[in-house]
Length: 248
Image (cartoon, rainbow, N blue to C red):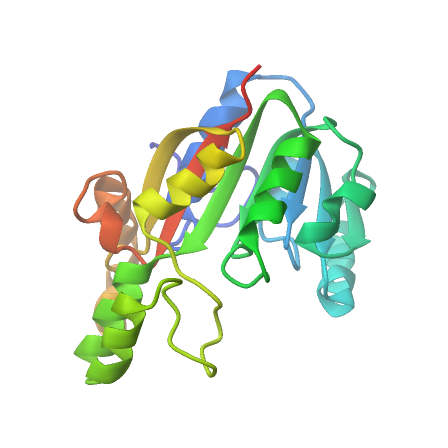
């Protein structure tokens, strides 16, 4: 994990460093190859535009027309408008939006915790991947939510998050579910993916005072990358990043 930025992108942050490190390794497996990338819920193109600048073709599927409009502007400003395609739609409707077995790399970040049912979404991801294609999946972590609520004095909410089967905190919760490592891996495996790597994202970043996080940004990124793949620190991260592959 030596890089200091994403492909042709801005400096790495605790939210992006680990994910970009894993993606960079996948891109390096096929140097000088233009990959077909699908970013489900990719919004304004935080990952899509750097990937396009690195020479790949990216389709972003997102339900928000405003986000897709911002994506198109961002791609044009970066000079990669011809490499980025914006498609309005939901993750569970990929079958009608993307050709089967047409994608080399699919990104599904912060999606599975908000959809009605994550199982058909993951099945759709597998369906659009070519054999040997890879999936980058980022989900909300349950343990971090429990710790966060408890340290802020909301012990009743922490207890609900810890015991609720889906890891949710009731009707006012903005997320439908949260995951632990075992549950997230099992979801992908059940759909036919082989999980190759699991990392924690924002292991400590959300727990630190802003003065520390902002004042030692570089050191924090390096510490996050050091802890990302090491239990038990990995397992208490705000998000869990799973990198999986469809068998060839």
